[in-house]
Length: 238
Image 1 (cartoon, rainbow, N blue to C red):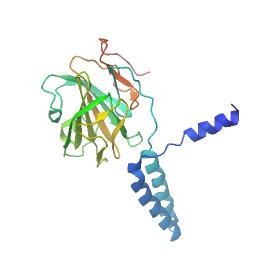
Image 2: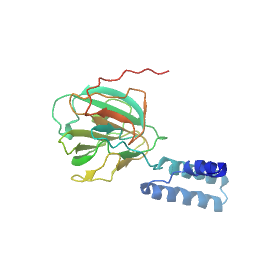
Image 3: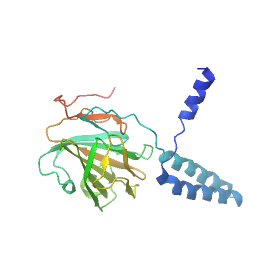
Image 4: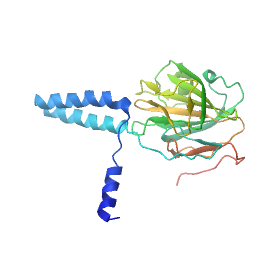
């Protein structure tokens, strides 16, 4: 394999096609940029061209390599792990009153916003909850903001809670998989437009294998292991 081919592959691999949900936003911004250019409003043409490029970047949908070993729970979203707490599950999940570890991932407007199934199973529950648009990094966003709650049940009967939460900029939660459907680990199941948060509720008694401040990659970063009794991991920023 030649160096030229390697360089070409590296450059080509840095370009990621946007998710189809973003096409209409790209088309509108691109048309506006072209219109401003044709009427020679150069400043606005440049600004809307940059906006179009950012929208293409925002809706990028890269492939991921999901671990397939049974029992692994992976991140549902790209972003920074903003909190790990033991709390009662969100009411809309219908998972009872027993406390579970909740891992929250905050997605900035620069993160990939396509969400992926943390484990293989059947979507037992899918509930939309209208609400506010507070800063998604705030703890109370889990209860106050607009959100979509899903429960994924594994073939062994283990239930994992996943909640997509809209933020200050996000105004639309999109879900591709409906209640009753089966999803594979790492499979795309939805997205949140323009900044948000995703909470994962582990089964009772299971610990997080990640730490606050860590960067998560949706569909790849292992959050927990149902087949391990490993304690919660300690970490520090270096």
